[in-house]
Length: 143
Length: 143
DNA sequence: CAGATTTATATAGCTTACTATATATTGTTG
DNA sequence: CAACAATATATAGTAAGCTATATAAATCTG
Image (cartoon, rainbow over all chains, first blue to last red; front, side, top):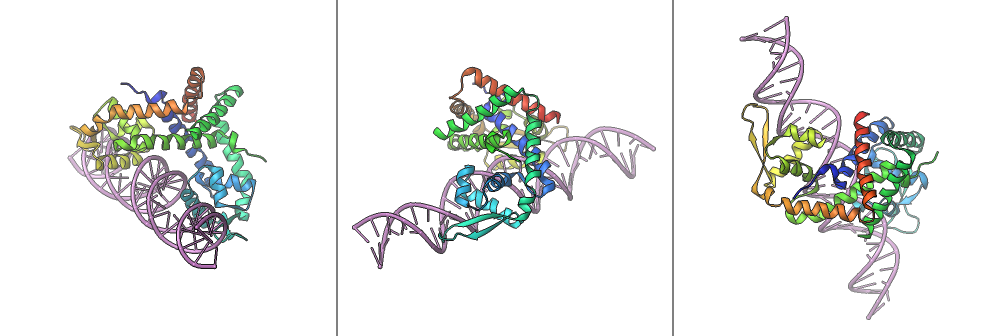
């Protein structure tokens, strides 16, 4: 039996993901954030004051992973966890001024990586690529 | 400024990569291997008896990452490290009978994940997707 | 309404990435 | 050929993913 890693979707995806991750790391390091914090920051920049549970559902990440990432973000002065007004179990996550102040720079950094990575593709090919990934995600969720 | 994670290539790639990783994990667990060992195993199944340096170059992974992955593979009885016959610094990595015995099962597991993930795509769309990822990897390496 | 179940978060332990640094051997060069 | 530079591997420390488990609060149910 044969198996060619160069035509294996999983193998290629993993490789591409590592390249994006490191490309983003380099570009956001100056702002004091790391790539793993990006999804939570995006969600909170869009709507501040969410519970951990809301973030977990939006980002499709495990609860324990989110809790640990939020620990590091709290340590780094990016968020504060305050008590939920009516639910004693829950905490609400609020961005600090520091987190708000780097928003535009971070958007630009992420856009720059995306632009660089797709620079060899035509507008149609880019659209197709994005669309295919969205379909693959939906297929996984059906599985 | 706006930034939509649902149309960000980097965001989507990261999500898809996690889904592949976990999909593979479930399917290869019965054989006593984990996803991070897969790239090294593929390279060694193709050509047994390579140095760490050769693997690092083929897999585009950092040397320290490879060393640690090989440590776990040695611990798990998948490989042996033997002295290089002429270069005292180098070690040669050899697969154990255990690693060889799971090869076909592992190939099948990986193919199953790929097939499932791409099941919603036409043959042309799959080809296009694979081709695009190869182009994106090349673009990153030019950067 | 007391006891059982569910829910929200936290923590422990593992893997797999990374950077930075250490160590030993090989190769080069004055 | 001795000193220096380059190369191959290993290790320490951090991040970000996972599963499994713990804890406290809320909800449901007989």
